[in-house]
Length: 548
Image (cartoon, rainbow, N blue to C red):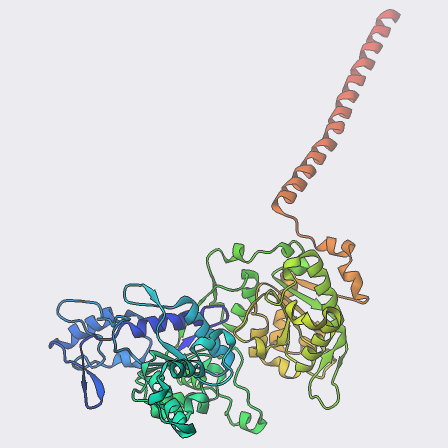
């Protein structure tokens, strides 16, 4: 089990696991009884075998209860031959490979992993990068991974076949397709599928079962969904996720009450199963990661090297557009009839003004790949999209990415504006109080996260109260009054301008120069007074002499 907080590189960890799994299997194998078996090794004492095993598989030490079980006769295949102290490997050109199934709860999360495998490849035993044979099965595959989708590969094979040898008619074509799908599954080193589609009858036609199953976003799936891919008889499973990010979606309140929303990941964690946590985050500016690290991860998150410089941006010249800011707006919430959702038009107006100011001064933000507007409420998202479309036309989705918190799980932007919506007196904040949704919303940005909401309303919740107080302590809290246009006036923004190091040095030099300049006249006045007294004494003395 691997716990991956925001920005800690869960996808990169999965790529590393795939490289290790595919290239740390024993070379000496035999085929018997319809399955591959590992040849027996030389006889060693228990202590010697344990020492070799730890050296051969350092990445597994302490991660699984299996580590506490003494292997017998090298049954796990982690033992060297002769005097070698490293695991034998399977080269990428060899026919036999470990069969791996990679799953995720959603198509978008799955395609993110597939795309990374296609772009970066897998590392073999010599640290050489290559592209393993993979297949992405299921519906709604993103166009970027279409080349490895099952339907595309089937069509490619059919087009290369000699159709004169195939059975005629629709029935024959159907049989051919089924056989081709099964052969593609068997030949692929890695199979990618959503959790639900892994229960497809297609898997029953395979001749090879899966040795390893890797489940991404495991904390976002209900337990029965997680069990579906495990039904294929795997020997090892990796659960990768974060219980303090978005949970599984459960429609029934009654089912939620009785624990249906509890993921297998969380259940194992609560049972004391060991969890390896990724502690270094490589996404957010350190000023953004301070609060979520303290609030949700007991201060254990560490920032990657030089992350401060990598996430510095030109708009940080204004304190209100810095890495972390909270804008306190006492807007008016409303609930459109029949929607069950909430909207806040005051926040929408303020966000539109903020967007116009940002893109007018910093043109790089005029892109949906750079800036996002996030809200927990779908109707607020709908209204924001309509307002931006009215301003920018049909291509509004190219200048800004507007979506719900759930829609942004696993994604990131350079800047994120978070609209909290709720604004009332004593009525609560609804599901906005879910700290997991809060955690996801404020950790999507690399350089700046700007939170817009009613502080008095949000402070009814402990986590949001901590965020508002934290913003006040760090000087990142800004009270906004109507008219909102006045907040973005140059005269007001100038008061939030952060001086550069050169400007600070210049100002300090000018202050010291002015202070020195003020001291000089005082010294001259003292000197003149002393000279004047001496002149008077001389004059008196001379006069006295004359009188004398």
